[in-house]
Length: 486
Image (cartoon, rainbow, N blue to C red; front, side):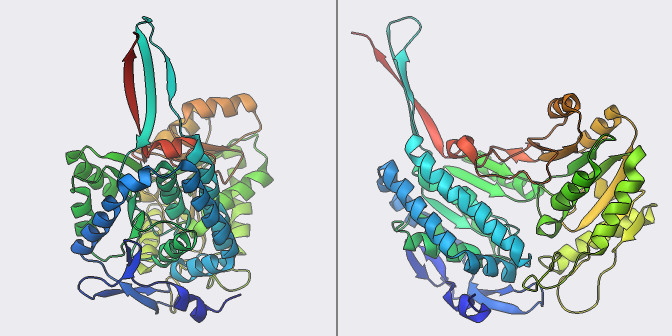
């Protein structure tokens, strides 16, 4: 495997505008840190608002030309990018571990998952179609066709640096849209390396532009307010998404919002306990709990709650914490000290209101942004962590007595991204599909994400879908033409 220093030397550190790597207008830089040590990995260009406008200028300049490019050509570029990412799996995985902290094995898993969006949308590029047929009155022909929605602004989060980039960039490319991509300042290196990979795959200049910045709010507001922009896609917190939607309203922008979650993990009395425990650990501790799909509230039937809690605590106690590059590590550092403080604050609040800390629950001494895998039982209804998204390795268990109570507790949140249900009763499982207010569900499954599946939520968890057939529709507009019969 490539050394850390050699890998960092390969990663571009400038802005990617108009197919060229360029310095920030004002020469400023920002540091990207290793969360396992707090030390700087590398300094990168820190874009100004003017740099953001430059990037949009470059994208707009080639929109018409890119929209006219043959769908097969767009698909082939994505397919070549897929092959290159697969060849560079070890490099992308190590890079994500360095800048975000996740264990290397999980980072490799993200490369495989994120790369599938390139393959999926390479195939969807040639399947964009409309329809043709007589109107009901028989007086003419209805023709519908699809066209790219236009220049797009894609804002990606820090927790899945490759997958969130490919999940937005790939359908935009496939649909014929140009874009400006703004990765999170905490984990921008993976996106920069992916941009270089797109260049290596033959992507024309200006189709994708990448700006990294510490002035996210001002730069985003300027781009969103530009009348040339036609599409905004954002993955991140609900409060930020709400503000972006307000800004997008002035331009009547097409928006996709994948926002916060508060996922319930419901275990009924007839569930396979071994599979339930395995699924719970996957749903909670994937990405060190830093995922919008992470299970937040573990609702367990009272008759099995004690045994479930005992097994979970035993497994969590054995989890190894350390730098993501170390063998056997399951809990790496959180992304920064703010994330540590946020998790600990929620744990402390729950404990002060009567919850029992079975495992973990304290901030370790030493360098790095570490927080141990933590298990809480006897969590009371007024605990903040039952209402707020826990973006960390904290598992909170709440007992219930009846199916109706489980449904009420599961739906008692403003969020509705994903839910998890464990039961061996098929009829009950079907009832949960109907009754739980989430855009996605794992039925006897702790991991649900797939490039071929529509990802998205309801209520305050967002609008629109990413991945699947629906994903490319977010970047297309429908045109209707009426042709009278002669």
